[in-house]
Image (cartoon, rainbow, N blue to C red; front, top):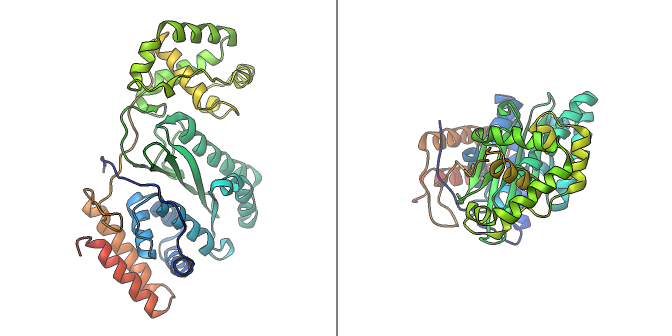
Length: 364
């Protein structure tokens, strides 16, 4: 089913209280163990990649703020609750500097699971490409600051990562699922959640295929030619560039990493994924190549915002949004079964079920 709409994920500062986190971890551990036993690890990853279910899990655990915090708190709680040796699952990465530890943590988990070195390398690659795509290939002025990589002992994975926009003080969450990724650079997301912006440079859109191919062709040409072409764009097409992003100067791609382009020229990338994977190919370089592709070669990028999921759960943040009732009912029933069977004390079980009932009827 296709979903459209938007949701506000306001940036909230501070921390969840220790007494809440302690209870969330205990409840999360019980839920995860039941899910693994009853439905399997693959289904657990599918559920985490579902934004409705992810939000429902946060509310059931007791964190029912519908803000940016639900992403960081829920993934952090899962990381504390999940024992790789007990569950065959691992949560790597996290917020801020913890996100930079993701590759090392993936390798550590892969060794625990007995995965081959090539498989571990592919998981590290998936983590890096997921972050690179949402940093450079999609440009909506959201700076990535949280990256959680969840993996199973059979090599399946999902990503939950989040970016912040310091101007409008909103967040945007990106969900990935390995079994849904046919290409890292062609509409790879399971879901993108947040406030819908106006014009967004989206190099992952299907309609940007010609622009992706042209960008690769440009890079495989002489770097000096790229400089000449960019000079033409800069001097003669200034107004056109500003029109693309409603006059916002931030679109100007003048801080291109020329050293990275020289590296790309020497490596001769065969496709856009290989180009994007080269170290140093960042947002400004991607943007510059896209504008040359468009204004000189007539191969335009996409300016369609990939956000396509909306919520209406009601909570401490107030205003509800339209809800997809069938998906919500499925998430609630799934969690109800897991909570009822979880090995937790009766008081915590009743409180969780109470939150779940309130979640299913926000007007109460």
